[in-house]
Image (cartoon, rainbow, N blue to C red; front, side, top):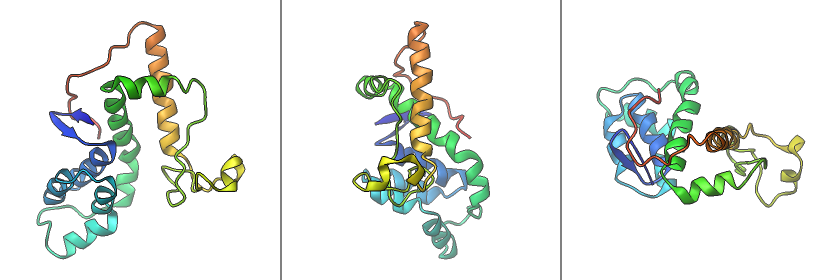
Length: 170
């Protein structure tokens, strides 16, 4: 769970898809995303094809056209903002991330070549980075946060944040 801009989210997927819906003014979709706690349902709801279909069917009256190029420009920062809030608000997750030390972190998703490595956790191709089909953006963001948190801990500047964040992820 994480809180951001006075809203509580069940998971980072809900945060991400809610922000995606709001970025393009899909207000009824954003409400629907907040009504479920199932990450796979949330992911399906926030899918670009689902968004376009809702607009075509008149389910979203004042939304802007979904534009992959516009979303690509902000989506890493949106995810980083959500992950930062999640780890800063949960001491167990924070400690788990710090305890990975300098390990390479990956998102082992066979179907996701942006956030993941495009390989299954149990496949042979995972053993060599040369075989990865994806860019591992989730792993990269987690390693970036880990480095930031480690630096702040060494400088005695880190305090777990329970307060809510202001809305500044775009």
